[in-house]
Length: 193
Image (tube, rainbow, N blue to C red):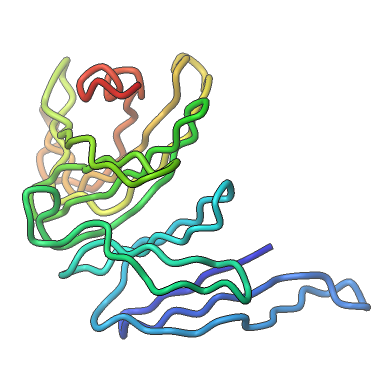
């Protein structure tokens, strides 16, 4: 297993986790590097060996996690921009058949940006979660997680996003919560194919 730990000081550690001779977990640092400011979400693409890291005030970076093949990092998205309004927060990858979608939380405008990253990186658009059917909109979002394929009643996949305030009737500002989104709705809205 590979674990990546990033911190508020911009420092990033890549660790290889294995079982030692006694069966206890063993961590060996494989790489250490830093970004210029606070990092947030990170996610590894198991298909390509790419690591994506959100830098709160500056955008999203792509690194290689392959030992001995570390290429120079590539900034795939700049913040602030039309794609991302700082703070850049959570990142998630969704495997959708042959496609791989990178989703990023754009906290500054309570939206989410989507890129195709299975081959050449291509920005595909943004979506927001609006008020509907008695459920409040997502605001001040932080985290995002996703899973492609059937999940309960979500035949195409499920996206879960953090909402900083529950503003549903009778619960205004009471607590944060999470919203469940059918990936098919995102796919349709952004024409993801």
